[in-house]
Length: 451
Image (cartoon, rainbow, N blue to C red; front, side, top):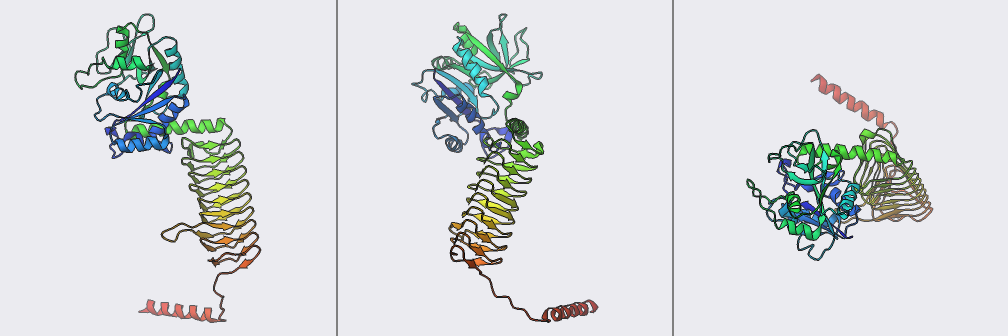
């Protein structure tokens, strides 16, 4: 049966005290919204509809950047979750199947949990609610069960609970329902008396009044962890990182000091990768099997191949491609460059917009001067070329295979293969002048001190 996902992302998130929409705050290197969308994609829906409201244009753009196939619906006034879901009616007008309602600020719902809810729906329940057990119900709505264990109603936190209804099983807000039934029930929802909001939770009681079957699936409380404040965001980051570290080690990576390694949502590590302490992974990073990442490195938008070694204290920026068995050492920055197999850039260098050939050796302090103040230019260092320390390659320039650039050179023209290039002023030596100059300076200093 077909599946559609409605992802609610219209709220302002006033408790974040921010100029930015809540769902665009980062978690694991990507917006909160991306986590919910990843969960949605994992259950292979036919459609994903994102409902936006506060700062809608920004949230729309972010959603489309994550997945350009998503549909967008607008909730101009935030009048409750039921009202938000109703805004998707047009986008789902011709849809026949099950609808899953998720939230952009609830990042840890697992696809496996949603599959259990979908199975319960297909076993005959018209509406399925996700609940969780907690010792502190707080502001959560509570699930009310009948004597036979079936779900009868959801009692909002501010409403008095009927006698006999405990507060230990709470409502997460996640719902699965048949599409047509969902919108029929929502059309009957009355606004809440004090706030005037239309609650999605009301559909459970309405379904029961129609004689429709309802059910609840329970999950661990950790899955329902939401983000409503900066404190919540920090706690969610800790939850995400803890899970990402455990997953990385379970999949065969060695983390020397797990608590100091920070992952993004899409970080991909191969088996037998070794990661030193204090390493940060931004979005779109892949490290293949057998690579070694030494401590205090920063990665984003890059690819590290098998057997490569990076760091310590290296920065790999977007577009960095480090091939098999290449070495990128301490205080080296690579941006939009391909470092081919076996090449070495071991110390204090910047390589930007360049191709470094197989087994080339780039000496300490070498800089590719790729930016002229307006445009970026690309350069190439050939296979087995040797670039002496403290050289500046003024792009665009090509160093041929097996060429040698002398230390301290400024290279502004192409260097043919196998050639030697020197681009520095001739050294001049004046015998005895060094000592005479120093003696004169010391005498001047002594005279000033005696004044």
